[in-house]
Length: 237
Image 1 (cartoon, rainbow, N blue to C red):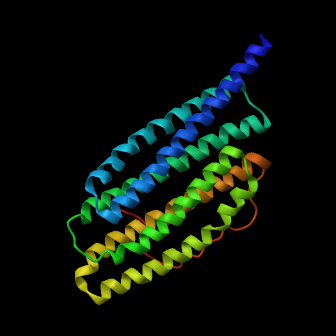
Image 2: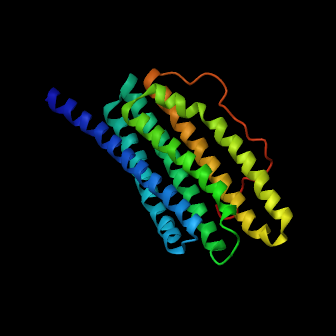
Image 3: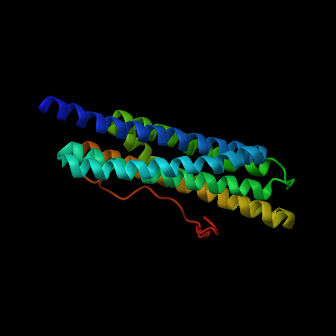
């Protein structure tokens, strides 16, 4: 009986890991597709990203329910308890990443018929590529419990903020040069802010990995370099 209990407990934890891995895969694809949709102004791909968000929402609810039941039934201690709590935290961050990718896709629908030069989008694309790399790295670090890799992602957050500040100024310049760019660049600014916030969520996951592995909160202030005062609240977000 004891062996059976241990085996089923291991299966509970493995199921939790599997669902988080699935969430990570969906979130990565949503962000990648939202970026491609923005660059190409591909409304069909943008719609697909919006639909994909429902799957993330379902997975996040299932993970929360599974975790609560696991705690109630198993009363885990030490690393097992931390893994369960970490699963809830990471699923919450991945769900928010999906929401932010969906917001970018909605912006694509709003600008699809506009004809501004492609060069205006390149800065957002570059920033998104870097954040996608962070997301991949932090998910790999979570799966392998790699503390060094998690810390590396955490340290890179400041560079993303600096890039956002630079992109913010670049887009404002385009708007001042030609008033016809104002609407398009405003949507891009919101997209860039969404990308920057996705970077923040990858940093959250890195901090969760530190807690999972060490049992302690990561000491020190998070690297931040965001000096812009651009509004972060988006209608309908």
